[in-house]
Amino acid sequence: MLIIIQVAGGIGLFLLGMIVMTDGLGSLAGSTIRTALMRFTRSPSTGALTGTVCTAVLQSSSATTVAAVGFVAAELITYPEALGIIFGANIGTTFTGWIVVILGFKLSLGKVFLPLVFVGATLRLFAKGRLGTIGYTVAGFGLIFVAIGFMQQSMSELQNIISFENLPPNTISGRLFLVGIGVVFTIITQSSSAGVVAALTALYAGLINFNQAATLVIGMDIGTTMTAVLATIGGSAAARRTGFSHLIYNLLTATGAFLLITPYTMLWNYAARGGIVGNAEIALVAFHTSFNFLCVIIILPFSNQFAGFMQTLIPDKVSLYTKQLDPALLESPGLALNSVQETIKIQSTALFRHVSAILGDKINGKRAELDELQSALNETRGFVDRISLKGTEGSNWERLVQIIHTLDHMQRLHERCEEEEDRAIAARETEELREECALLVRSIGEILGLIDQNKWVQAAKLAKETSKKIHAKVRPFRESVMSKVAQGKIDVYRGTGYFEAVRWLRRVGRHVQRICEYVEKSYLAAGE
Image 1 (tube, helix red, strand yellow):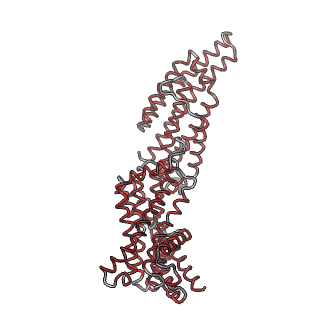
Image 2: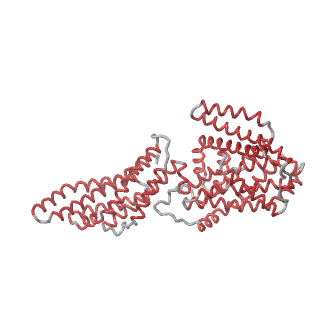
Image 3: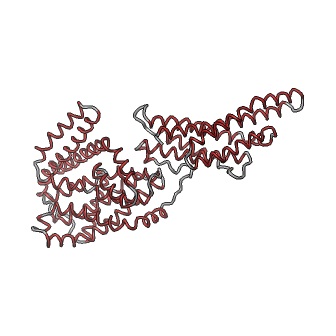
């Protein structure tokens, strides 16, 4: 019992090392990696290459997958291109096994890496900034190999407890049972790397043979998709497609790998000195990499078909007003702000078209479902509230401030449309205001065209000019109405209706202006 606890402790220590190292690498290179993913992903093939490299650097296929989901949701890359990143991440995650088999079983781990943990921890405690983060990463790296050494020692003592006879026989049903064990192990540990290292260590200690280790690794490749699938619960269609794409692809990969175990073993026995037994650890890591690499090569030409299948399987069900907002983007404030800007573009366009519609424009005007639009505005504000920035300076902070201003004016414009439509009708039916109504309608038509081309500077300029012209009409119009009331030409009730109509025009023109101006400033803050 004590030995089993020690093995479990070794696995836990390995997981801790992976968490520390992955967090450190994420802080050091996370933003750079995300930029590289977006910059170099131009097709499924380049996506697979960047996904492989980035996962190998970050030591986390989850981080790579989350970035891919974010890029799709923000429409920075297409879904088929993102599939390439996901496929490549499967290859990159095998890199840990190569490090372990090359270094882990060749050196005296406790003696070599314990000092590395001390050095890294010291840097983390006493150094600041980037150097402290490097120390954190180094400590995690050292801790991984200390854990492997601990597992080696513990598993070698398990030889008297576990033998091949106690494990499932080398039959199809026995192998499937071991695949299931691999799946469960990865779901529990939330790390396929930990599972592969445990299988390598057990193989090195003589607790299992190659075929048993290979089937365990296949199961671990399936198990690693469970985290991604669970993370898509409540997410967007893009997030669900990505998570389930990972699952379906890994199931296909596992099926192919399962069929390759026997031919692969025969090839090693034929070609390598000492056969599969004499090269078991290197053969296992090579098997893990080979079947992932082979499946990527096979599926890449069919990426578009695979994407089409997933889009049919999981269609878009989200509101058109908020389709850009994906919780996965919150991991990267910059991407989250990009998605909010695109969302504001969609929602403001709908608001402007609604204004034109209630002013009688049959060309550019289109009534919106105001209840749905209100829900979308609420969801957008809630999403913005969840964007976490570390400081109150920098371009992202400036963008966030401008976006909050924009949403405030959009909400107020929505209220003008929902609660005061009678004033819009009064404005368009008042002869003295028809020129201003026509001006606002024409301007909104031009503004919509400019927004469609992302020409927010010109849109803001036009909206400002329109707002000034409408505002200039207010005072003389009010004086004219007051004079008519005083002369008895119209009653006070009707005069009040005129005041509210011109006030509505002025406020709507002002909201349109401020929305365009604040969006313009948010893009300028982003350097666009």
